[in-house]
Structure formats: structure tokens, C-alpha cells
Image (tube, rainbow, N blue to C red):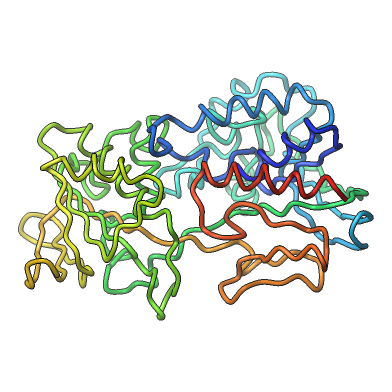
Length: 399
């Protein structure tokens, strides 16, 4: 969302823009959401209008399956080397769906966080932009699947990556974030029990175009997930994992509690929290508090275990308000994992930039006209990302 916003705002101010995206389609993690908060509207409300702005603006060149490999030069005069990956689809293929509809080979569906599988060739997802087929790299890495794919009439595996050299005056870096690895939080047993999921997986589970067509069920046996526990700060504000607060996790869980409550009239939700950070969405928080079927437990969850008799999960944690130990038996546990900037492990290929102790890119116009926007700068929600990217584009066009 940061990159899309920065691109359209810069282009509509008269600048030539190259929008470089690593995956085969735009939208990032926002495209995988069920709803934004606080209005609870679907992501295409914001994405579709921006896709239209991109299509109608000849000043924007979109490069998907592409990565910036090298940046040389100085403010106002950069040479950027971009590697553009092939889609392995013949240029004369006009129908993005039918030629591949009978392909049996499947691979893990990364758009759904591998909660299901998809065809090895096809459009990445139903809201993808561009709406064009691609051969997934995972298909090429599997000899058996590759043998099925290479004989399809619309596929051309001989295509090679191309290198582009771009001359630009400034760069807006918007590579976003990744969820913190929940498997590192051993006491929450994310790797051990399939009904312990992360907040981003919950978003796909609840989405109508997700792995269960929007049905909230236990992944272990398909039973309806009517009793759900949300564990806040899963790895966050913890010196052993992420020392900082990711700012948006509380609101994400409050939003996802509405998914559960709306799915089943007799559903019930428990939220284990240290502090609730509602920021400017206090009224939304109050609305959730008014629901008597949503229980807030102030305290850190200490364990998630399986009750062998019922197959349910048991969450045990402290309850500060009652000075006791809370124990809740639920169908599903959702871990509110924190946001890790992509720039922690994948730095901008340009020397001399500044990063903070957590890997967030720090804006320093005195050093370079390479500006961070969105979640590579700090953890922010979608609305704040749009505002930040708009402001950043105004700075960038001056170079």
C-alpha cells in the first residue's frame, strides 16, 4: 500500500515513476486482509481505486516479479539496476485462466500463508493486479511438477530474467514488513498444534477468498471455531524476541474478534493483553468492550496446551485484575505477532544509509534522497501508511 500510494501520488504530480514489486502482483499484505479497521471494509475498497489510477496514468511503469539489485549515484542522479523476473507465460496467451484450469500439480499457497494449496500455474489470487498468470518458482524447483508444467501450451520455461537500468532522481523504499516467526515463541506451541495460528493467518482464514472460503474452523478437524483466544504481544515487548511494540496488533485482534462474533451467534472471545493500544481508534475499542461475549484478561499468557479428551486448546495465563491464574478452553488460539521490517534482513543496496537498532530504515535526506515510507520506517496501520506515503512522495519529487 505504501508503494502504490507513493507511486500514484508522485505520478499525478507530473513525475515519471517506476513501481518495482518483488512478487507477481501488487497489493502486498493489504491484499490478503479480510477487512480494514475501524470501518471494516474489504481491502479492494482502497486497492481497486489505486489500480485504476495506475492503469490510467501513463507516467507509471509497473515492474512485477522484480527486485532492485544495485543503486549507484547521488541525490537527483541515481542509476538503479533492476532484475525483472520472467512469468514463463507466452506473450500470445490472452486468457489468464482457462489454459491452466486442468493442471493437477499443486504447490503451497503463499498468499494464504500455506494454509492450503494452489495450481502451480495461474493468476496469483482473484484480486491480483496485474491479473496475469505466472508459473510459480516453487513449481520449477520440484522436478515432478516441472515436468507437468513445461508441457502446457501457454508456458515457456526458456524465458530468462532481464536487467533494466533506470535513471531516477529519488527513491521511495517501501518493502514493508514480515510477521515475527511465531515458532520462536516455544511456550505458545505454534509449531506443535495446528489450531494455534497467527493474526495474519486468521485474516486469511476469515476472508471469503481464503483457504476455507471464510468459514472459521479449526484446522485440525474442520470443526467450527466458536471459542477463540487472542494472545497479544506474542513475542513483542520481550527482550528475547521483539523488544518494541508493533502498535497495530491490538487493533488487529479487536477487529478479528468481530469476525468471530459475527460468524456465530453463540461465539465467545478471550483477549489476553498487557496493555491495549487503541491510539485514535478508542471508540472502536469501546464498542468491542461493550460486547459481553468478548472477555478482556489483563495478563500475559504463559502456555498453550492440548486437552487430549476434547481436542481443545487450553490457554493459561495471569489475570492481574483478579490476582489469579486464568485458564480458558478454546477451539482456536490466535497469536498477535509483531511486525518486523523487511529492512532488518534485506538492506537497501546502497551504502551509507541509517537503520535503527531494530532494522527500521531511518530517513536522512542529508545523506541520500532515498526515503522510507510505511512499515520499513515504523509499525503503522493502513490509514497511517497512506498518509505517510503521500507525505513522502511530496519530499521525493523535489529531487
